Amino acid sequence: MNLAVDDNARAVQVMTPVSTEALAVSGTAASAATRNTTTQVVRIICNQPCFYSLTGTATTSSVYLPADTIEYVKCASSDTLSIILAAGSGTAYISECI
Image (cartoon, rainbow, N blue to C red):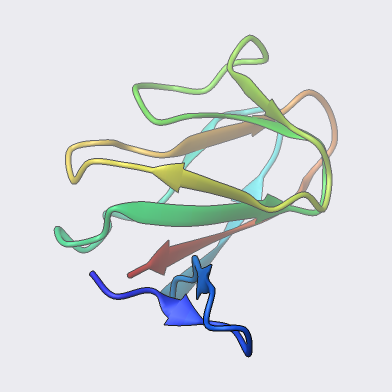
């Protein structure tokens, strides 16, 4: 894999988003759509504080993600991304990256 380089010829880690899903989220866990089998990284951002899991249904004990924070997560094709809010409702954006 060749990394992009900056003006000083230093490697810059970048990924290209190829699709994005807007997922309505609330106090009930929601699961993202099935990803492309070649996707190894997803970018998650939510407009509300949330919790996410790749290995089952998310709970408020899962990984915490503050509102409007971008998280890049390595994933396997068998993983299912699940997101839940502690309260209220919002939108999570899940982008597949290559």
